[in-house]
Figure 1 (tube, rainbow, N blue to C red):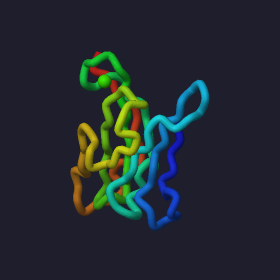
Figure 2: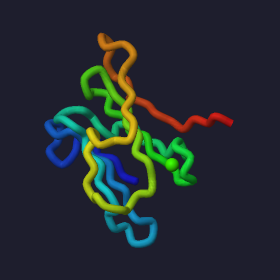
Figure 3: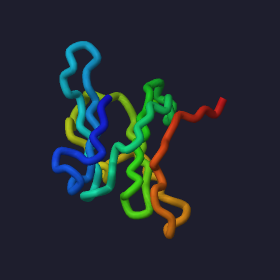
Amino acid sequence: MVASPSGEGGEFSPGEVYNLSGSDESVLNILVGSTNQDWFGYAVAVVGDLNGDGLDDLLVGAPKDEAGKAFVFYGPFGTAPIVVTANNADMIFFSPHPQDYDFGEAVGPVSDS
Ligand SMILES: [Ca+2]
């Protein structure tokens, strides 16, 4: 997995996360932030299986998306659609403090066991 928080358009793009094949490094999926300068992909973590389907899921932080957001994408990866926007994430966490910024600047795995 490779993150590009500033995306291909430099600081004026929303940021992107690339899921790459472990075998041939081909691009399986591209996850794209919702709006420019969101810093989508500033933090990325594989967080285990959140929805109980046996497949690992992905958490992506976007600390400059409004007051900061974190997006969950359920696996599997490498299936259509190839380009997935943040608005189509399976779960979205919002900053609990709208006046504060940078929610989602760091993300990490959690466990309920
Ligand atoms: Ca899962």
